[in-house]
Structures are given as C-alpha cells and as structure tokens.
Image (cartoon, rainbow over all chains, first blue to last red; front, side, top):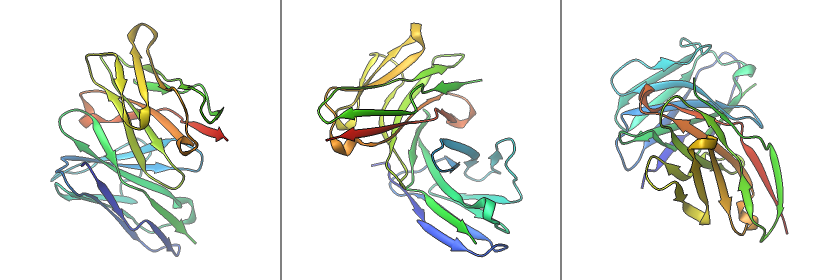
Length: 115
Length: 114
C-alpha cells in the first residue's frame, strides 16, 4: 500500500518551454502533497505544500509564478515549470501524506533537463 | 525551528558488518522521526518511523532505530549489512502542525564492500 507515482520519470525540454509533472497517490487519498527539489549529492529541498482544493503554500525563495502547483483531487497534484531554463534542471520528487500524522510516501522522482 | 543533523556524509562498511547511522534532531515538541532510503535516481522509501511508545522501532529490511530523547538522537542500526543496502539514507523530523512538513538531514551515503 501507499504507492505514489510520478509522470514522466524523465523529460528533456528546450529553454523557454513549460513542463508539467504529475504526482498521483494510487491506493490512498492524500489531502496533502509535497513537492521537493533535489540537486546532485544534496538533500531534498521542500518547494511547496499542496492541499486539495486550495492554493499551494510555497517555501521562502521559491517562485510561485515559475513553479505552478495544482491539486485538483485527493489523488492528483501537478507541478508545472513555466518558461524553463537550464538552471531549473534538477530532480523533482513529490510525496503524499497518509493520515493525520506526518507520514509521507514518495514518488520515484522526475529528472528534468532543460537545454 | 526544527533541524536534523546527520554527522556522517559517507560511511563504508564490509558486507556482513554491523551498521549505525547517526541522526540528531532539534525540535520544540515531541517529534515524529523517520528514516528513508534512496537508491540512485529513485525516490525515497520509508524504512521506519517513530511517533510514540516503544523507543526501539523496527523497520523493513532488517533495520531498527532507537529514539533517545535525552540525546535528541534517532540512530539507525542494522546488525549485518548486505551489498544491496548500499544507498543514501535520510533522517527526517516532523510535527503535528504545518500539514506534516518534514525537515530532512543532509543524508549519509553508505558504501558496502564485498
């Protein structure tokens, strides 16, 4: 149980284009989903907290107009990287919270490369 | 503010040897504590978690961790390491507020020699 999927697993795009990443909880409903960014050989950096039906809460320093988050249902959250640039290249990981306690289950990640 | 420190960036052990990965946390209330494992290019897998009760927690893959409030520690242990345990390990702390946000340590890379 508690499986989270991400799609796509990797994407290569040209600078200036937008990329959408999907995060789905497959066997449970997640009221809260989280989006992280991970640079090589570094820990996870929380970008935003997403609650179903409400606006995402962004961490300090994360541009909300650049990283658009939509949490349309209890099983789906999307992250759109708008007007992507090479510095946005990274590994993006989502997680979904199960239950009232802060247990998070993670997706497999999406490798974004912007040329 | 909550924080997590994993003092060891990289640990190397021989297959079959015992393992202990250190984790120290700072949190203003009773913490919820987690250990995750990440293989290269993959997401994070939950190994074990501590919410309350017995301070020795058993997890998957033969791992265990002990919560020591007096030392603000939550060290991960395994009595006999297998080559497949080579990965990066993250300790995390969270609480009951902020929608369950977790704060992660910097991670410890485990290398296993045959």
